[in-house]
Length: 246
Image (cartoon, rainbow, N blue to C red; front, side, top):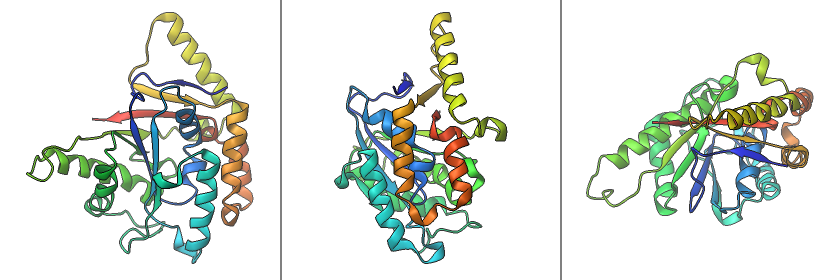
């Protein structure tokens, strides 16, 4: 079964946007969260915004279709998901995207859908990909824009931002054991009265893991040999830990 400790992440009446850089990010890194939110009894509205089509190898259209199939597996409503193809936000292993460009691009999706929470990468980007670690800076830039209280934005609610914690290299590849260890930690916190409120944690059980693998397998163009190893050993297939950016 899926388990979560998300007291710091209010899901009741929430409209949660997962902000990613490329098609396949949603399944390789965020599966426990998407599946956990989908099963949450408060039924938050879940949105997905991908800021490129992953066209580094000329496979943009293919990867958009793969993304659509993956989000179908994850249960994300087709009307609540978008993939952007912007000239200044192209898939590039050496390029950090401009925070102001990100903010301008995501602003209408956040504002028009009354997004209450943005969930994205942290400043290390899990895999140190510069497109990944650009996203929290862009999200923060948008929040600062909305906080400026200009006449156009004074009545707009400002979303909270949560970033997915990048763990050190050894814990990153503990696979199913990461779920076991995390659940033990949650149990200890519960028994000792420690609420762990600084972090929101989602852990997957066996069936959630299988669903996440199914989502990954929709990205056929990306399934080179080492990604099959990733499916077996990656912590992010089992556990997501989040911290709020304040």
